[in-house]
Image (cartoon, rainbow, N blue to C red):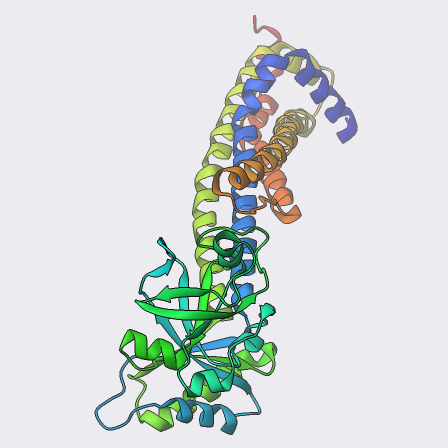
Length: 396
């Protein structure tokens, strides 16, 4: 008996008992669909994280001075000098000061992000000024009480005419001299367009502290590791210790986040794959029942000269066909659930997240489903092949 004949006979047996076959495939269907949705969700999260961090600049290094030590302090001029000395790797530098004070617009209080930056910060990060002007060197040198706001604040509180108006940050009134171009698809509170940027010298005075954070851009993203090493070497030579600073890159943070996501997705996919094993046990169970029901048929075939390998081939192919059909249905359901999940996540979280299964995940899920059918169909097939034809013919 050829493989095609065995496959044709297997399909006839599957079609002859549709409900029993469907219940047998249910575990495989659920397992494959779950694995596809989970892997797709992981891919969507990975893409979302990458896009989120790319807005912050994957060509940037962040330097945090945790302690200045007892003998040396790192001034802004010192950091600028380090960048200049490593101009083969590093491009530009901007001190940054994060403020936690309240932001008031008229009588309203907002939770906008407030950051003190230099005159080069906007060009370093690829931000554009849509109206007015940006921060200038003179603003930093004179600690001017000015700021640049994001598009959200401009539209939500000033009706698109924020330039020339005032805003209070940490109890200090600042004049708005510019508005940044919109960066997000939607203007919303707490988004990237809900921000206030002022000279870092002004922010440092308002917050009562010194500059302890710097953003440094690299010349080439492909040499970000070498650039980070060069900057760390310069800082180590300055402090003569690595206890007083940390240097992190956005690409490094992206890799850390994606590795965490992949780990979680792998664990969840492994848990979902348990249902594939359950489905395999169901297939083995139903094939054992099928062997019992078709004992007389097996006896007739063996008495007519059918060899054991042909009997085994028929039952293994039938188990594999059942499992493969369940895998195909699971793949279709997985894609439908992925599309529904994308819509649901976007509607509930108001964030663009696409649950996108990969072709590799689909191929692996289908291959595993077929493999499980063959694995769990082997024992019933072996039992069928070893039946004594005389006993099988007398089986009632």
